[in-house]
Length: 218
Image (cartoon, rainbow, N blue to C red; front, side):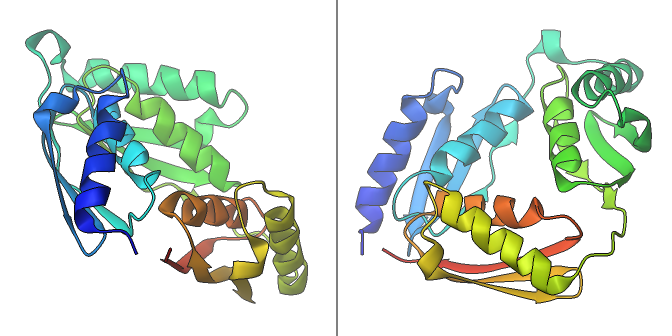
């Protein structure tokens, strides 16, 4: 079990090593493996990247990202301009399905709506919106279309994906299916491994919900 002081030091070093983040403006606190980040950054993408970096650190059990986005004056933009660029960004990212996604912008905050077939489409639409200049936050309310799938086949596909992965210990994770819901249980060594297992579960056809009950335990 790593100490909170060790985790704090490694998170701070991980943030400082990322050239895309102004880590001097981020404060890190750790209690029982739960990392809380406060301070401010100059873009929403930096806030998101700080969270990704933190989750990679060994011993991190959860992350509370309370970083504030303070846009530089030159990055402040009217909502209609942001909305237009979000639409274009999603079109470039998902040329075959962008019309199924709608963007609503208020005060620089983007809400994505619509219905798509695959979870990766939700992720990529959000990633595209996140990179647009002037965006202060993104709420991903895109739904997944119902797809009929046999639960036993979904379970096997996910377990096979775990076995192929270089970053997942398949023997430490249990997969259960309940209709279109996948439940993951077990213990892994890092938050990144837990997130990778969840990503693999979402990649199976027919999955509309994933309950990640995996515990991070060294």
